[in-house]
Amino acid sequence: MTDPAGPDEQAPAAYLDSASSERLHPAAVDVLTSLLARGEHADPRRLHGAGRTSRLLLDNARAVAAEALEVRPDELTFTSSGTDAVHRGLLGLVRGSRRGSTVVHSAVEHAAVAHAVAWGGESDEVLADEWGRVAVRDLVEHGSAAGVAAVALQTANHEVGTIQPVGELDLPPGVPLFTDACASMGRLPLPGGWDVAAGSAHKWGGPAGVGVLLVRKGTRWRNPFPGDDRVDERAVGFENVAGALAAAAALQSVVAERDETNARQSALIDRIRASVAAIPDTQVVGDPVDRLPHLVTFSFLYVDGEALVSELDRRGLAVASGSACAASTLEPSRVLAAMRVLTHGNVRVSLTRDTTDADVDRLLTALPEVVAELRDRVGL
Amino acid sequence: MNPSLALDCRGKPCPLPVIELAKHLADVEVGELIAVDSDDVAAGIDIPAWCRMRGQEFVGQDTAEDGVARYVVRRVD
Image 1 (spheres, each protein chain N blue to C red):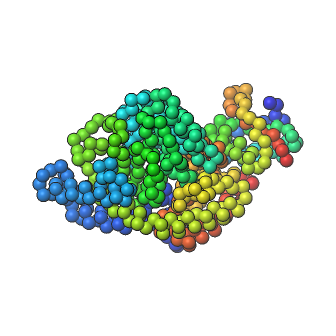
Image 2 (image 1 turned 30 degrees about the vertical axis):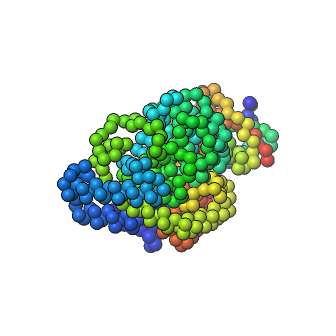
Image 3 (image 1 turned 120 degrees about the horizontal axis):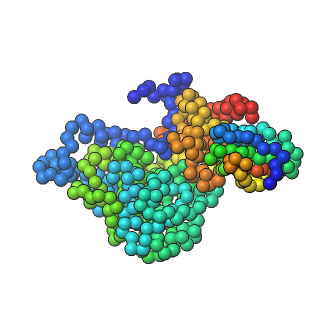
């Protein structure tokens, strides 16, 4: 690992990209360190002592995570990632459907949902408004059509933070609701009304390589992929016991701390929103109130997103961007495009649980300077 | 749609088409049309968004003679 301090700054870099990946929670570090130091990762299906210990740790991880999410332990499966949980969760509903293979989903879902539908279903996309919110009426109307296997709606948008009305959907019997909870899991309680949900541990401070798939008791879910003969029939491959336990420990801590964390982060985001909105020709997007506590997205007219991210990085500020020039695909963010808001000059700031007032001060000092400098370069 | 001025932004990535539009808006009279020819996918989102932010009128999307997308804007002020 390289020196975490930015090259031009004496202060350590402010990492403001927790929505891509949150810093490991100390509780996860403790679990990982002690389990890895022991060096044992026996097969949890074996009957010997080491195997029984592995099984005990895995069952413990499941129980702790289930309690934190207020679900039954047998409704929770650890997967190899959040994306894997989305794919399995959604496509398992399509496989289990007696009605058809159409998936009604919003235009602002994570790419994991779009990829899953393109692979194993027919897409029926429902538009979002300028805040990124999807209308309950549209989803229910589309979800009531013949041939619909499932409706997919995220708990909250991963790019703009807008919270979706998951708990308000009244779908016809036999049409299950899938919710991608990756952006909010741990930070906010799960909404009601879903049949299958997915989460991603590295977004709440657990390790990468651990996802969570929740399937409500009684849901018609069938494994859409080849099976395996492991501990949990919904997953495949050798269990990542240390990862699952570290993810569960982080989740338990994050849930216990979230009232305090959310209040602090939400106030900082309000400050950022107000300050950024005062920069000329700027669009702050997403719902200002009904939103994730730790995240805000905005775009500056005439500014190149890639240059903006690089210039902020040079000043020790790590942020993400949904602009085309900053993306591997060279296409603008699907979410921003669906909301019909500016896609260039885009920045997503997402706070970590230990982001300080001083970090935000640095960001708010740097932004107007960097934006003015980049606009000056193009003569505007 | 007959614009008074058409800006050739072929091959220019975002945000260059919007920058060109902003720089050349004053080259047409109030009420006249200015067009941006662009093969950049983001232009279809960003030019209407620019119009809303800057109080100009997005008239619509057309096609230039070579098939490239043409975005037409009316100067309002």
